[in-house]
Amino acid sequence: MASNWRNGRGSMEDHLVDENQRMSENLAQKVNRLKGIAFDMESETKDQNRFIDGVDDDFNSTTGLLSGSFGRITHMVQSGKGNRKMQCYIILGLVGLFFIAYFLISRVRTG
Image 1 (cartoon, rainbow, N blue to C red):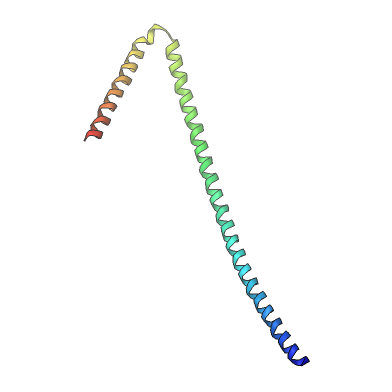
Image 2 (cartoon, rainbow, N blue to C red):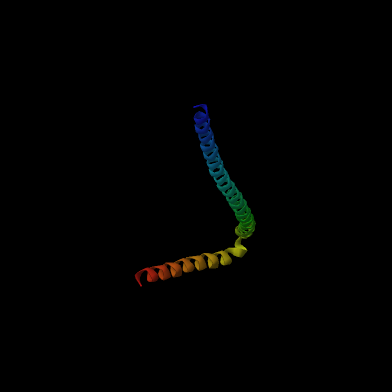
């Protein structure tokens, strides 16, 4: 009877070892999947950081362009009567451009 108990215990231990091995392999697969996800997240983060740096550079160059334009317009407005004629042309040109854009947009919507 002692030998039957040992045989039963031995098969029980074998079963537990097999189950433990299966669970270890399952855990290893999950760890590998998580490792892949972590690498994907890292590469995506690096790509997004490069994109944000590019956008920041674009905003900085646009800020420089706009500040220069604003400075020229401020200088022109403060220069006195000599540029009044130029200011009128610019204002008329902008108003004309607005009406042309309005006309084109309304024509595209109806057409």
